[in-house]
Image (cartoon, rainbow, N blue to C red; front, side, top):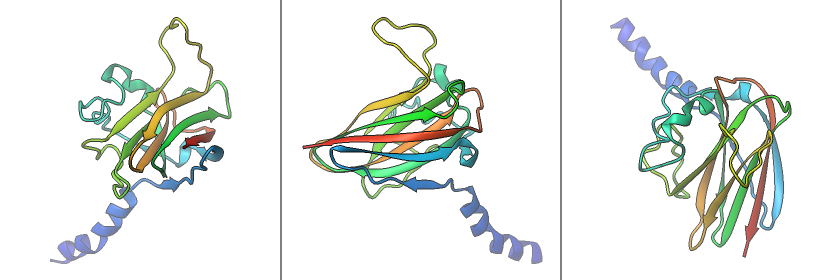
Length: 178
């Protein structure tokens, strides 16, 4: 009985501790804003299957090693008639970062891996080989985050490749609004 009572008392705190921290961003219409962070403040996600689910289609399973580090989350609302671009800039150019962003309803706060579906998901990671017409440096940029007739919540995940769990970065958020 004593064990059951103890478990019932601490269970809510265990649940709260398991929730990753999410930083709020405030995109500027027709402007740009920057935020700082470090992967060491993130959370390891042991389940990445949400990303290649047909309901999300964020990145293929063949690229999962590029998203195995700690994940740092940001969220904000993209107003209707707007387009957002997000870029992660590692402080150390030799650290391999990846980024993804997905759109959900404004009142939805679902975080991965508990994401059963989203409106749109985009990801950027280091390319495995050269691609004609594309060049890549140490930054990663996600585009095509759009809201046409209604606003959407955007959740941005910054992560490291190959289990990278530490590294300073800057997140740049650019927005064009009608």
